[in-house]
Image (cartoon, rainbow, N blue to C red; front, side, top):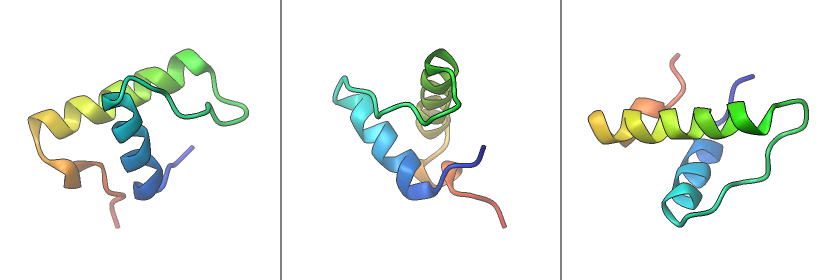
Length: 55
């Protein structure tokens, strides 16, 4: 499942506020939270543009 850049930005902002976005239907909450943590790590190592969709 692909997520828009806007969705990722909002999820990362909520993460920094100590909150989680609602888990999309059909996705495990555990896997979804791990994905957000991965997006955060990528931004910390690189820059916010790293999570933009390619193409």
